[in-house]
Length: 50
Image 1: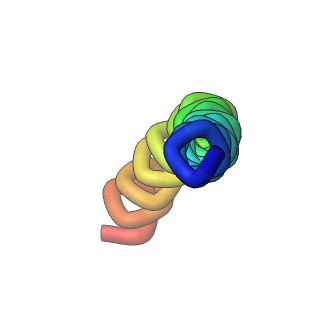
Image 2: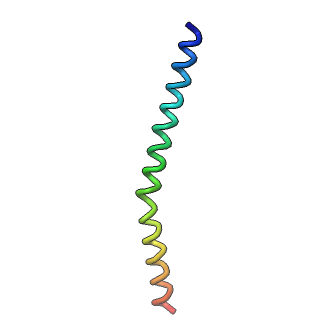
């Protein structure tokens, strides 16, 4: 009985880690284009001012 409970706890923890990792990767993919665009805008402002 203890073995089954231990396996269930490990599987549950692994599932939670997987879900958190999925949302972290999704968040990075959403924010990456914004960072690249902001960097390009900053470079354009710098070139325009000088």
